[in-house]
Image (spheres, rainbow over the protein chains, first blue to last red):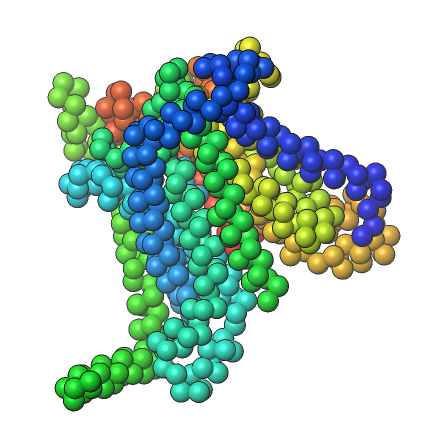
Length: 265
Length: 291
């Protein structure tokens, strides 16, 4: 490539500086989780494991974590089913209104969360008369999670082509057998990558959750928001955040490996 | 295995093959089955909810009882258009969303370019992980980390307000801009850049005439995220925004404290209309396939 040496250097510096800006606040969060000063005085007067212990023992944190996991799993399963179906329809068939379908799937993340939130809560409340709870949270999350699975499966189907499936049919396998033995194994990593993204999206969502969860259901982000401004809870909130940052490396690494495998194949 | 069970199995297999053969012959049936659930969910339930919300915007609430009065009125939209406060808030929100989008674009493009075109394939994988990781860290806590940084005795010490909101939102949505641009640049063949160079174009000219036009859909895809996410945000504003409210806050306050769902619905149509216009405008660029 015909880039001058200074230009290359400049671009590299921009990359490193950008990553620096991304990571400094996260580093502050992790460092503050060991800060002996309750109000995060800077520089920290000393380091302590006290907050990690109290977070571990906090029942509020545990309940919220479990609620978030349930909501995330529920939304991911629905998103996997709906996203895969829609991706197959759009990629494998030609029909009237195809573009509208893809627009419809993007819409829930393209519109501001607060609009989706109040629209769904209004429907549950005044139109259907469903009490707000875990189920309504899952419905809300699934609505905006479909797109992540859809995009991953769509990309995979585009690359996959029809050859192997046609070969399977020629060898006498029916539609279901071909799906089970040929199509599904080829899409597995795309489904996992899309599912992980969907779970992540659901796990961190707060706006739609605020409007669809009612009083009984407290996901982790809701718990964090409730406790963010309480001075005596701030260190525990900070520990939860630090823990999430550290734990999140596992699924990202997994998703990355999977999509990497797919491209090298 | 008993004879009955074997016959049952054979029947089940026969039925399955029958259904499979039927589906194989009827593409339209296959398509309708595939579309049924996604369309019922997103087309009926989700669009239906948006429509119901839009209808609510033409109702009002009883000032004494707080109940919905289901009688058609333009009052909410009249208040919205005639109130100076709302016009200011709407313009401010669009301004914030646009500023965040531009800032993120300026920061993200060089980063994505360095990732896609200068890093080795091995380094690329790590860089993508580095950009993705912050997305998994709690949104609230990142905003809160900025609150700590920006507080008047913090490291940056800018204080809270509009600038703080723009800085924090730019930080929060930066990865959403980097990733689509990176994907777009990765798809851009290096041969094109080399060809441009061989034909005598220098760096800037190659960027302007080759790189930018070909990655524009990816840029637009990124901007949909940064623009939309900023436009509807009210939580970051609560954490670092001080007194300058955005559309999201007006909607939120009208649902919570004021208990005026119809007016909240009317206000909520503003970002929806803005986003729909935006999506309609960028659909031709092919940006939606780059999300």
